[in-house]
Image 1 (cartoon, helix red, strand yellow):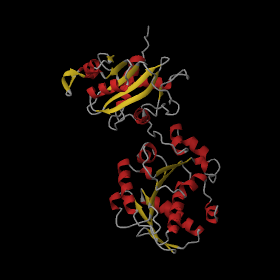
Image 2 (cartoon, rainbow, N blue to C red):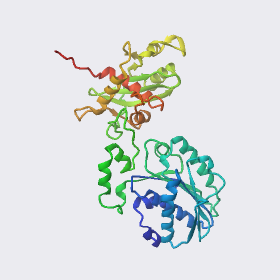
Image 3 (cartoon, rainbow, N blue to C red):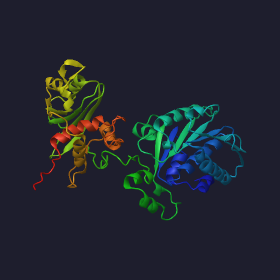
Image 4 (tube, rainbow, N blue to C red):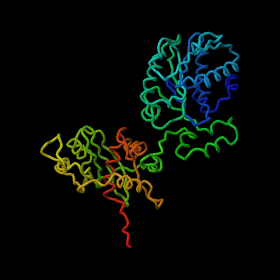
Length: 413
């Protein structure tokens, strides 16, 4: 390890991130994991590699720049024995070695114009609303265009605490594209924290928030989660559909977004093993089920509203379309109440005996898994239908509420 690295005293996750050769690395960590320190150090290393070029530091607010970034950069520069001069009006830190560190806020991404940098970094990126974050990311990438003499790529890194299933989750965790790399850092990875710091956090935050704020994990931070006890690790199974096995499919009818959640019943509890989502219409869903699962008897548990005629075929109801395809339809005259359906699903997720519980192949059913994790209650106390996380839970709920209903006790006076 070089003299510079010894002086910086990096933790293992910090060192992996600081010296990462990926173009778009993300340092996602808990409170006190050294995220800002790692980002500042990485930018200084990039700056020293190309002394005459500028680098950029971006943050959601001016306070994060003035209260965190400036002091940390000055601390790093002092350790490196590099003189600097801060121009607060221009938000620019000039270095004696040449070039500058340019600071910009992300409160209005459209103002990120008029300069070029070789490399950049964004601090506490996940604070931003996902739509604003996407715009800010694109604007920052557009600034990273100063051509390097050795042909190395321009880079843009982020450091952040995870704030639920937002832009960082989508871009770096769920579906990372080429060049994107996530480095995770739990709070415990930092040996320089004061004694008792982690215990203090445990005393303040509930368990679900500790996963984010201590472990750096992406979790639902909303207290009104519809399925609060679902855990993609606890409920995961590697099981697959067996040849000839009877299939039970919860169905939610929607134009251009029909959903079928494919389950099996083994040992009198539901196992979710496949999904069809974003299907155009009911005929397409029926065809897909028959084509994908030949040799299986399929029973559908659909939305009772499918009795009505649909525009896709004015002469047939959704239920009749399923029957005509050879699918058995099991449906009551009306849907269970939303509350009863949600409670029935939660009962299978929790399953009080502590041994059996709902299982799901999270690899085969990514949409169902995300919906269990992310659906929340709206301001009226109903499961939210504005974020697109309702179709899969509705579909599987029709199946579970039919097969494992929650019967109210009969009281005798």
